[in-house]
Image (cartoon, rainbow, N blue to C red; front, side, top):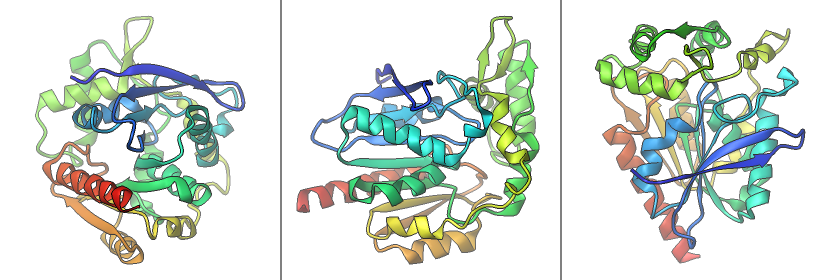
Length: 291
């Protein structure tokens, strides 16, 4: 298991934010990993452990998740603020070039970041997310985000996760569900197993007018010449096949990998995703050498 350092930085509004820093080669740009809406840096543990040493991996906890502080203003739980937070980290670390890995919400943040720092972005992975999001998946996400739950044991939590996500990972065993439960839940001071995020992240969704998703194709244009991997779960209800195909056609150096029998989102541990990531990083290395 690769070692990592728990590190922190401060947001512009004074929040103490957390990231895991897995050491890697200093002559290569780091990989900045950004998780989904209700998730945290632990989602990237297996990927980081596989790549660490060869690549520096920085896995962030967005505000209100994991070990990052909860925001005083819940209306700051929106993509432009996450962009501002991560850009602050990049500036603090003096990172000149980076690779962005984004799952779901993290991919939206990556797209927005690309528009503001295109010259620094040398590679990207978008995990089951694109410039258009399927309304069916958005409706499902809005239905569960911000709903608190607690359990007396990890096995109870694992069974609840399995019940709620059986369509996403139809072939998982209880050991897989237990591992997921330990990524998305935490033990609180009362000894209960609870979701590891601020329930108030749901509040921006409830504001009238926020139901619509902005057109992200303009932001996506920033990826045109960047080596990019698009990962889609074959059972996804968020990234439609037609949208993924349009994304692929819009870019000069992109690959689409579809992970069979998985919904929203692939874990990036699947053989298809692992092979795609290795090909992406090989393309990035080749471009860096050519430059």
